[in-house]
Amino acid sequence: MLQNRVDPFGNIIYTPARGAWTGNRGILHDDDKQIRRLFQLKAWITCTLEYKGRRREVMSPRTWTELFFLDEATAFSAGHRPCFFCRNQEAKNFKMHWIKGNPGYGFTMETSVQELDKVLHLERISKDKQKRTHEADIQLLPDSAFISLDGQPYLVKGAHLHLWTPFGYEGSIDRPGSGKAVLLTPPTIVNAFRAGYVAQINLPNS
Image 1 (tube, rainbow, N blue to C red):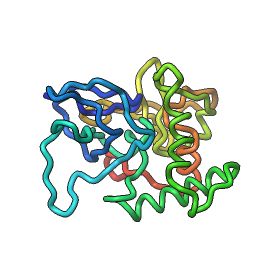
Image 2: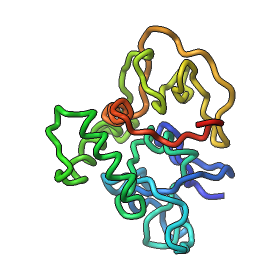
Image 3: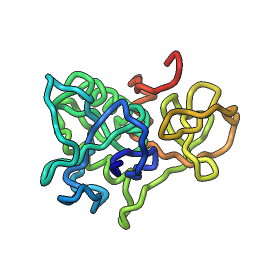
């Protein structure tokens, strides 16, 4: 079992559970397939599990580290975005909604994705390389955002909060009608959700 699954806090964990998406942050492992760093690049991306029949040995020496996610909402919470190579149309769609939801940056579709990555990197990682959280009004959060409640990650979906586990979501609780929440998903990604981007989530009928 390899350390290659990502939780909503952005941690890279050990688990036998499988993921619906892959992605990367650069070369994070050594030749013995041990994780040695949290990230190498500011481009944290989410990719399809299959692309044109290509095959890779997971954690091959001196090549990017394959990371895996329960669903796209989890990947976004960790700070990843769609890949412009294997998910080109989805990546363009996300960029369009990110720009629409965050007009204050003055970005256009011609703005390089590297500029967007710089913003995301500041939102997801502190100077001491810890997960950066944010404060938000819980009643105003859109579907697919993640919050931390008593140190546990919960997905926002409608009037409910769903507890995340590596194997899926375990039950739900009612979303409070007011109050502040510890937001895990980077705020500009949350704004992209508000602007209309629909993230894939592994909940029935979603």
